[in-house]
Amino acid sequence: MIKRVEYLVIGAGVIGSAITFHLAEAGQEVMAVDQAFPAWGTSGSTAAWVWVHSKTPGSFGRFSELSAELYPSFQTRLGTDIEYRRTGGLVPALTMEQVKKSQKLVKSQRGAGLEVYWLSREETLEKEPALSPQVLGASYSPLDGNVNPFRLLGALLRAAQRNGATFLTYNPVTGITLDRGKVTVQTKAGDIVAKKVVIAAGVYSRQIGRMVGVDIPVGPERGEVLITEPLQPLLRHTLAGMRQTVNGEVLIGYSQEKAGMDRRNTFDTLRETAAFGVQLVPALARATIVRTFAGLRCLPRDDLPILGPIPGVQGMYVAAMHSGYTLAPLIGTLMTELLTEGETSLPITPYLIDRFAESKPR
Image (cartoon, rainbow, N blue to C red; front, side):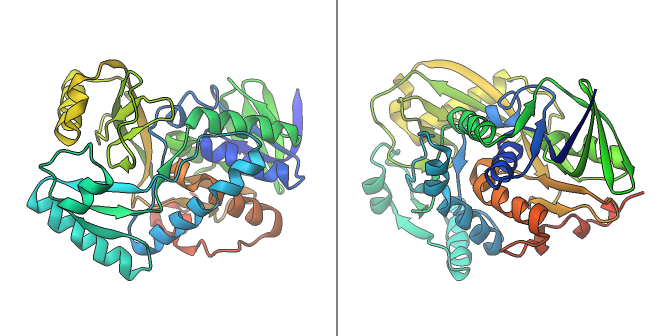
């Protein structure tokens, strides 16, 4: 069977699904394919922060802020509660080295026009009484928050389908051929011919790019997370490495491990994560851990999004990045503008793939 479609999105995680939704909402004919199901990979293994204040350089912080500002209307358009909460974000400092690093960040981000502040110990504990009294202070921004990843992904899927989008799940891409302005994507379910194709496959984007002779320089970084039983309200803010969900569970963890594509938990990292949690919030010593998970962050080589057309490969585009939950509303908007109008309402020059010399088609 050969399917024909105007736009095809490879990947149905939060970025791929956001692009699919925005295209469908704009009245475009769009299909998304995924080798499994939208929440099976990175987008379902995350603490799902909507995080702005420590994004550097400052220009990227502003880019992230613009996306966070879209969340209230984004939720309204999706038509369901995705548990988006703008809690404000804190990065507590427990050592003088962390204090100096945070104060430097605050100065830099404020210089870029971001609402980021340094709080003294007393101000920090006033905002977040559950923190250890050993805290020396914290950087703080009212811009930060979090969202329920499963509610958001489900809402994107349903809203896109209501607007006419098609999702072909459990359908891996096996090859891509280019011919006279048409892109043919070979999949397990058959060939799909599209005018424009977006690679939004997260940590698998590099593998897909190689099918058209392009190196998309992204790699995996493992993060492991502990989840407690539901607790009474404990945390008021999203903390660096910790947050409390609407139903009371506390997610703890922000490990950064080079482990290839291995998504298994490791005892040593989980033990370190538990110790970190108790050091930061002593009351967690009495909490029961009910489950753990590990996810793979999609990290571009310079940590900034890779976004836009692939030079020299007609009809092919890329949207690969970390911080997908922070950026999903803005990326969906900008990619839809680019695909349908040929330009974006915000400049994306810093994020184009041609900043990497090795990414030129071979």
